[in-house]
Image 1 (cartoon, rainbow over the protein chains, first blue to last red):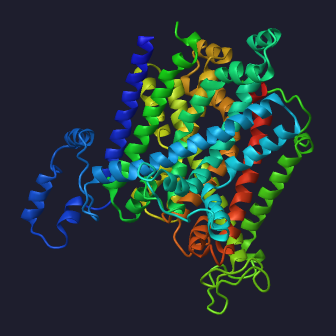
Image 2 (image 1 turned 180 degrees about the vertical axis):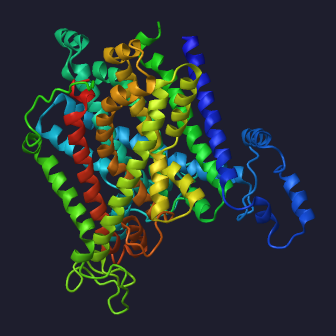
Image 3 (image 1 turned 90 degrees about the horizontal axis):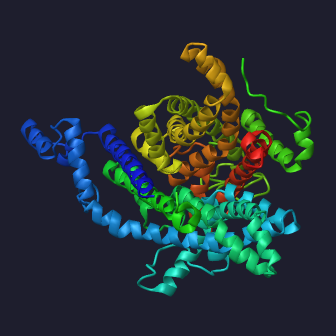
Length: 315
Length: 287
């Protein structure tokens, strides 16, 4: 098992290197000369050369990459041209918590709604509810989330005034107000994921219900709820955890749109503004951070399998 | 010629329409949008770019069936012309992504040793980024516009395509006829062209139809974020974004293009689902 973990970690490390190399290349390929951008319109050749040497741009490509990677790992991400703010502080301490809060709330909401629906439609396979849930799941997965957000704002926030239209209140400062502000964005972001969770839960549960240990549990005279929610549930944990891991990218991508709809100051808004303002360092930081989160969570998912399924521990 | 014989167990190609009413309905909706896109200039009642101060933000009904936007542009005409952009960008980028994915996937599937290891890590690295984020990064490099959005979305879809192509190649590679061809000392390129490609093209085509909706969604999302297609192009994502500020008193401005986008995406999803369930051998064997 240690060998398995070692192999996984080595693969993850290689993927991280490739992603970092690609996002460094993004900086290098970006149009415009960073030296000119820093110095403004008037400067002599001498100051230009000085600045270039100071930024390390006269070094060979690989040396620059190693330098950049070292700076990135130690949290020296540079200064934003426009805002003149430290990028690491801005991205990691201000934007990231917003996105993480939204993402976590949406995953929680999706599991809370999606898993019971999936289980029920698996148990009552081909029933009326199953058909309705299946059609709903397909529609929810396909529906454009940003348009759904606008519809929710129009109905629930503008027409009925039930929720605030936009803005973010950190739940760790004021929990009630934070949740109230988070309700519509989290609902918007979770819809596509609810559809996906329903489908995965249903498929996994149908397969589990045909297994001998379920028949044996029934033969022992265990009540239906125990058979489904204890024996069944335990055995669909693995596909569920895998789905959450694999779909994290989809959720982060949805978060970008949801943040724009509800004007939440998270990574999505940062990325959009960075593209519009041609701040490639910020784009690159957003790309690296998204990939890091995805890769890290999927490594965790991989490593969690032996805990979820004891049969895998012996291998 | 060695194409794995896919058993078509149920009836003719017409059968699928009779057996799947929702699939048929979805196909009709998609066809309707294709017709709108093809004949946009003849169907649309107004010029999609004609602005008018007298007809600003009129509610649906009357002269303008779906109302007008804040520039007095006819929303129905803009939606009809917008179908053109949605479908062109969607199809173009999917074909681009499929081509790139085919090359990378075949290369990763056929290579051995450390080359394979590196290629698979590269595919993993691309897959670590969701397509919208990747497309945003490409847009940052390329700039905005219809052609650039197509290119950016296409490049961002290479990852998922190359993964499925690789797994198909691995499956075909282990078949006896490929092994036999190798033993007969048939040149490698010939084996790829005659034995491997014909067997992975069909599943790839299924993938293409399944992923069109994703491409349409990502390109509309880019325009919605304001970094995709530039105004005044009648793009649905852009129209939804423009109407966002007026949602309290002119909800039709983002509502109408939003409904069009949702209808197309749901129809494409149902269509993709039907095609996949019908033709994907992995799904049909009950996994």
